[in-house]
Image (cartoon, rainbow, N blue to C red):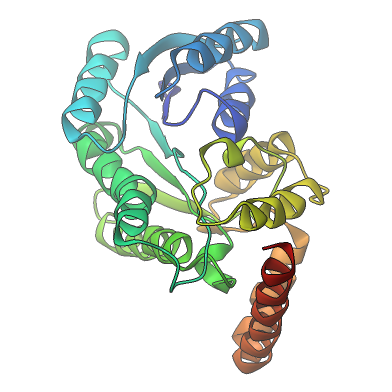
Length: 270
């Protein structure tokens, strides 16, 4: 095993914590993000943690930047063993309020960014019989209210991962998809939504999370090692997913009640 890993969105949050978790095992890391400052900080932390590697600015909406990143991995590392498609942005708002531009932006980054990452790195993974780790969200499985564009993009990541799981088995490429619930992160820095009230409500969800990005990275490392395909780091998420599988209608009713409350709250704030 060559121990070479690529991570998008590595400049902060979960991407950074995944980088640090693999760095502690002495891996070589190829780190990308749209934030140069964040990347430099992650690289310095990675080196302190026992790893090494390089950074390259990369916007996952631009396929040519991802193929250039893959070429850099080939030149500097001689290939890649694990790719982590982690770059993502938050979004919220009721369907009627979301513009088509909101939809385009969300799909371009959270779904097509993952598609392009897999596509750009597939030739290298075929050589190394490597591993794909796609970061989705519990929103992909639970479809909470007032975030339809985010739900759809993340559900697409799960469907893509399932498709790759079955298609790439013959090439001996492993595939995993991670569905964290909300956790303490700076995802809100990129938040786009029609109302400040919506941002505040999502912020409350993030703050109330008892689990950190570091905890999630630890869980992901462990579950990837065990060969688990669908990785649900939050206990509440695992319970909710079981409920949905057994009694989906109960969950839809709960979500509809939540939507009513959110509407009432945003009206009172507005």
